[in-house]
Image (tube, rainbow, N blue to C red):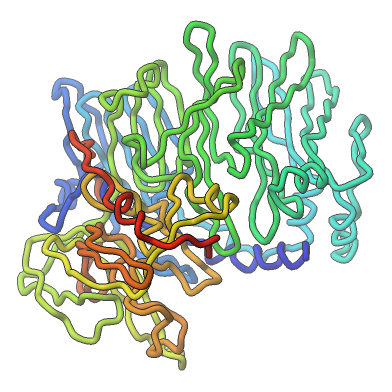
Length: 563
C-alpha cells in the first residue's frame, strides 16, 4: 500500500494545477481591466507623495504551461513574500505582484524564468532517499548557524531504497532509533552537536485516528523569536497517510527541544509560520491546508493564531473574517503588520487588532479580458452546444478555464467561465442532506450539510467560491461545480462533467433531498475569443451580512452519515 501511494503521488506531480476563486466583494461583468493592461497599476487608497519606481515592462497574457491542466494558468499560489523598505512583492509561479506601500499602487510583472523540476528526469530512488535522509536546511541566530531537518524512519522505506540501488539510511551517531516506523526532527547546533527528537510513531498516529500510515514529513518553516527557535512541521496526506501538525521549540540556554501538538490543529497541514510578540505574549501565525489523493490543495482552518504559552488558538477563515481565499501559503510579519498571502490574493492586517474588520486591508488577484467590439458568444454551461446571448461590454472578469475531449482524444470544448451579472436560474439534479457522522462533520469545518454548493461559502450576500476552494480532482474527473447532470457527460465518454459554474457566485433559491434550485452569475465563452491578463482588485468587506439561507432550508433535509 505504501509504495502504491508514493507512485500515485509521483504520477500526479506534473499535473497538480491551481484553483481559481470568486470575488471577496463582487466585481461583476462590467469591471474593466486595471489601468496597466495598459500600465498594469491598480489604485487603492493612497498617498500620492510616496511613490515607487514600479516595473512597467509589457505583461504576458495568462497561458497554460506545456503538459499542465488548462486551469494551471490561474495558479496565483504565492511562493515567497519579499519585503523591502518601500514595497512588498508576492512571488507566484507566473507573475510577481508588487505593492508600493506609500501610494498603495500595484505592479504586475511576468516571470520570465519558468524553469520547472518537471523538465528534469525524475529519480524515484532519489526521492525515497530524500525522505529517509533529507538535506539539512539552515537558519541563523545571533551570528550562528543552526541546521535542521525532519525525516521518516521505516523498514518499508529501507526496503524500497534497496530495490532502487540506494543504501539504506543509517542514522547518524546520536540519533534515536525506534522499534517501529517513526518521524524524527533533527537539529545540528553550531558546535556540531546533533539533537534528535522523536515527534511521533505509527502507533501514535493510528491511536489518534489521524491516519493508517505515516505521510512524508515536511517542514513548513522556521523563525527566530527573541533568541529562540520555532519550527512548524506536518506531513503529506492522502490514501490513509498523515502525520501530526507539530510546533517545535529550541531554547539555546537549556539546549532542549520541546514539542507541542495542539489537538485543535490535528488533521491540518501547516503551510507557513511567522511570529510576533505583544507584551511578552508570543503568537505563532500559521497557514493551514489539507490534501487527499489527487487533491493537494484543500481548505482547512485558514489562518491560525496560536499562543504557545497558553496553548490556545484562534482561526480566521473565509467564513468568519475578511481573509481573501481559503489557504494562506505565505505569511510574514513586518512590525505591527501581518502579510497573509493566499492562492487568490493578499491581506495586510494590523495583527494586534485582528478581530476588527477595519484592521484588514485586502486585495484579490483576479483575471480579466477585454472583449472584441463585436462581442463574444455566451454559453449557459461548459458543454452547452448553443450560445444564449452575446457579451458586448468592454471587458469581463474571467473566473476559470476548462477543457474536455472526445473519447477519441479530439478536443470537444475549451472554454473560460466568466462573470455574468444577469446570470441563469437552473435546477441542479442533486439535493442535500444533513451530516450525522461526527468524523465526516469534522472535515466540513462547520458546514454540516452536504449539497451541490458545499465547496462554496456564504459571503453575506451570495455564495462564493475562492480559488483555494476549487478541488482539482486529478484522479476524479477534474474540478466539479454546479453540474448539469448527476453523472459525467456522454459526449465526453463519461470523463467530464457539464458544469453550470465552477467558480461563479450564486443565490440559493430552494433545496430538497432530490434537487437544488440556484441563480448563478457566470457563463462560458470560447477560450480562443479572449486574451486573459492578471489584475489586482481591492476588496471591500460587506457592511451588512444577510443570514445564510441554507441554515433555514436545511431543517427540512433528511439526515445521512455522509458521502
